[in-house]
Image 1 (tube, rainbow, N blue to C red):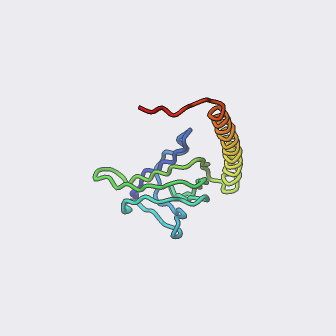
Image 2: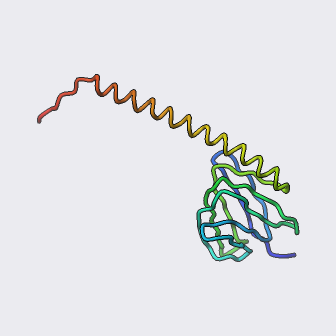
Image 3: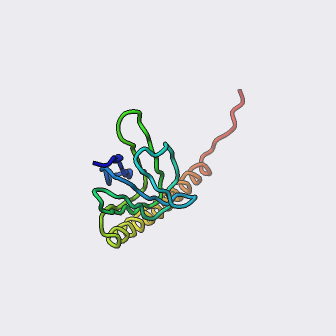
Amino acid sequence: MTESMQLEVLTPDVRVLNTTADAMRVLLPDGWWGILPGHTPMISYIHAGMVYYQRDEKIRYIAIYQGTIEVQKPSHGPTKVRILTAAAEEGDDLEAVQSALAHQASKLAELAKEADLEFDRIRISLEKSLQGSNITEMNY
């Protein structure tokens, strides 16, 4: 049996994946990195795109909507890889995974627009309230 590592992918809403992996490849700011069991501890930003991992001699895919990756090498137990992202999809069909992530990304973009609009409404309301109030300077 070959050595493996623990792979976990988390979004704010759900744990997308918690499994073992024999090897993985991920796109970091300085290019593609391979991660194997026993990898040196590290933390990095991940570009939006695909993460490839191998388990039981089968390649699987994780589509990531950018995030961070942390590799931990505990003194006891397997190497741990944790990916934190806003959205992710996992599977063995590359096209289906990419399509599902694109759908999630468009939903996130729409939510961000709505949040910006709500923030602007609140800011304008607060400014109007401050203009309408009669606050005088108090000298002590």
